[in-house]
Length: 201
Image 1 (cartoon, rainbow, N blue to C red):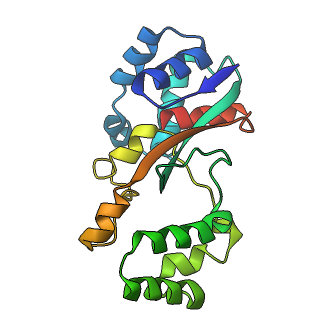
Image 2: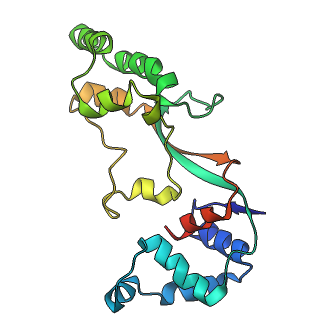
């Protein structure tokens, strides 16, 4: 049984090697030889890049040999330094009241604390908040399969999950007292071999 672990380049290559029963060298050599741009220029490709990469790879090596037993997901969180994740990473609906409390604690100005209290009680005029807060469908928790994607958002043109929205220096000083974690939690429910496609993402 294979563990899908994309925390580092090495762990991702080892996961592919284990799943396909191949040496690390053969996996790296094959993946480095594939030019996806050239593949798409050859003609019409109906797959996404990751699925097409898997398709090309499996033309050479065949299908997965070992089933996936565990998947490591990386959760991007901003939490007080005292957090120990004893309860795991909670969905938004279970964490929202704690988030409001933490925001209030970060602010020193009574006026700003009052504004936070009003927003907490009366709602926020923000599309994303109003989309996610009332709907458990959008509560997550969300995670990334490839840990480094969390720290290279500009490079891969992904949303910057770490960006701070406040320009208040006193708020930022206290905010920096929070730790930015990329916590790994095991997911043992992802058992089917289609998960192998995520390796190639």
